[in-house]
Length: 428
Image: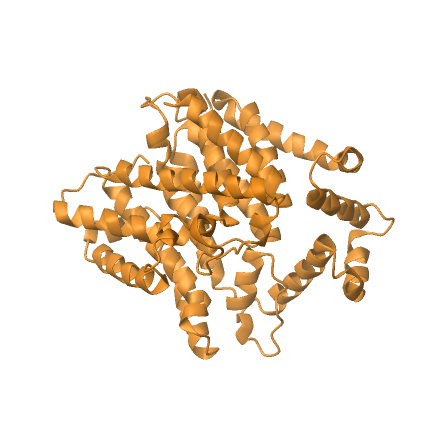
């Protein structure tokens, strides 16, 4: 980021912050923390409190947090979640408040390394090491059991398996996808091209084998787009991308038929594609399909795609019914799940739009200020997670790690130093 400021601090403070922040993030995305038996969620919460206090006493850090990360609007979410926890009598350890509070700590950590570049590279290398370790472990266990990632837990707070199997988590697919965007976008200026090729190939193999359909297809399509983008003609490439999406929609029936007939993907994804074909090309309109499947949802309990269609329909109904007061609305409707952006608004109400505004403003600033190589990664992240967040559920803490830490800074340790004076304009 171009706003980096180097601040003189006490060495002990920096080292302590580095250790604590690495431990904390390791817990959030399910890294080596899980291999240490005596470390648990209680310890993680204690570390988060220390990090919060260390961050708040730094005036320059809090100014960066508010002014450069547009994070003030995000504070609406922890406040709403805290009130919800108290009024709904949810247990602290099981409430949504804990998850969004951890998002706040992640943004504070990002602010710390945004104003102090001296130890940022150590911090980023530790993160990258853990992601590589997690990727290797997930590949190892997926070879033994192709369905193991699908059966693992989304949340880090519930530990799955024993030994290294604890590192098998669905979130590795989301994290690996974002790292692929960063690595491929910066490939021409990469320090270690061989490593980049191996990491991206391994990630794509894992995405294919794990068969999380939306994540896999979204990542594959966006990576093809990244390869087509010429950084010097970024806006033109964006128009071409929109044109390709239109073509994809127009020929979607033929594409689905080809993928199903040739069985290009695994059984799980092929079954879902068959269900998609049945939904969109059965002679009924899309809204008639929603009414039909909602009325007959008991007949389709074994169908993941049709079941999700019903869930999305319920989420939209809850979204519009609860939009002002959330679940405090008299006669509030329950959302159907599988849609984090809709779920949050239907649960907490319209105030969540302040949070989304903070995310959008920060992502827009990041897209504007980063160099033309990393713009591709940022753009793909925005498209992927805007889309996936409507049709899928992912942990908001992992989203914040990728938006506030990985995208702005990870290229610093994987790419060569380059002048961006003449490259910053998208109109070159």
